[in-house]
Image (cartoon, rainbow, N blue to C red; front, side, top):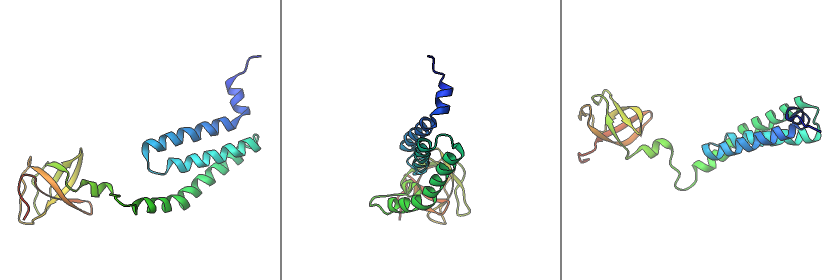
Length: 158
């Protein structure tokens, strides 16, 4: 007796849900943003419904969606707060402090543009009287909102 994969998957929707949960879990390991794992839990809930009520595909989708949204809205913010309060945690902008870059344009108190780690940032010098010429190697002193406060890398700070 020959088994058609499409027919088998149609009769065993749990396998599709379980595969989706596994793929989302692996993707979460690569991204580490605590979103895909919430969707994976929703897919696991869909797996459970598919095992109990294999004919009710609409219920599977509804339960998977409701569990995913519930996890994203209720659990993820709590987990993210715990992660941010862990000792040694630094946000991506905080990690930029001390990074080197290059001035893409003249940087004055009115503004300028730098490139750090492949990203372009609006910048201003740490000293309002300082002018940093285009092409000068700079170091990030601090992040002020969306503006990098910089100084020439080979100059000393006061």
